[in-house]
Length: 375
Image 1 (cartoon, rainbow, N blue to C red):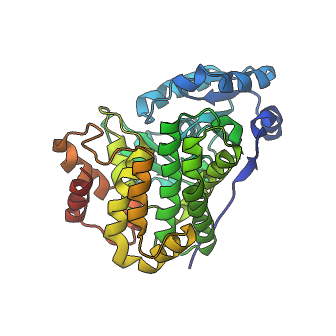
Image 2: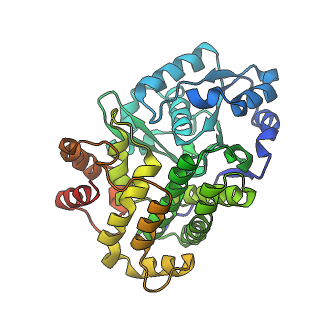
Image 3: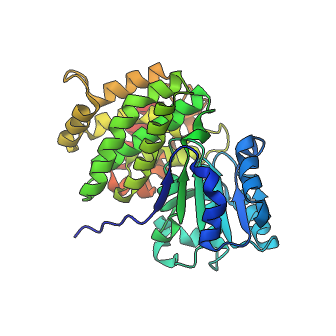
């Protein structure tokens, strides 16, 4: 039996973020807390939303790190409680949205954060008491604005996933205007994140034809528009389509991801060097596609046709060349990672929740091979 569920409300178009006050009022919030990061907090986008919400006097937490941590979560919870907030508005990329979901959980549920991790049996413990979240993405890649999950690095270094249908933001506000100023490097990294989401969810063995259709369209859209957005960040068609591809990737998380994310999740938990999630996905994707090929040949051929590849070009070859044109790193060593951490990364990948939905079953030896392949 296949369980299929799409519950997220989405407001999508240029200028959609200008309706934020009406949306807050619609949810009945009296005192929202904005969750964002140090960089965005200095830009006009956050200031404009704060100004639109001046009647609500929102609290602002701007301490979200590039990979959300338990320490940052505790600081955000402290502010949320001190200001007597009753809901959250996440502005930024996946890190701000994940941190907001963590606040929504831990201000309404007892116990420790760890006990709610999906790998530790926490999914059924998360209830509808989760505080309401409005998600406003400022990048086109993460898909977290329509995702039911959050990734948070614990104090002991473990990067754990927290999943629940109650984690869906009440409203996702997708405004391509907010991505027009993204620099080329971030456009490339986040765009490849979106493309990876669409590809990995499409080849997942879980049965969900609606998600497959969305993933297929999203993959075609991202493959067509990512280089346009990279080369001309002011191209409105490219920005619109990349935000839609990102949204579509998030909508297909229902199917689960695979080995790319099993590997990028523990890598993203490393404090130094700080490794960008989308960049990691782009780097790892070709090797995983080659590894999985014989276990999802028909699906990969479907993706290749949908993207419009020449029959002589495989999807992994296309991604490798695309990464080169986007000037993304080609190896973990190029990103500054030391090889002696790989055994710990293998352990993390084996324990990651995405491993279960990779089309090819994975062993410790398989992950050792894959990590060495991309090192």
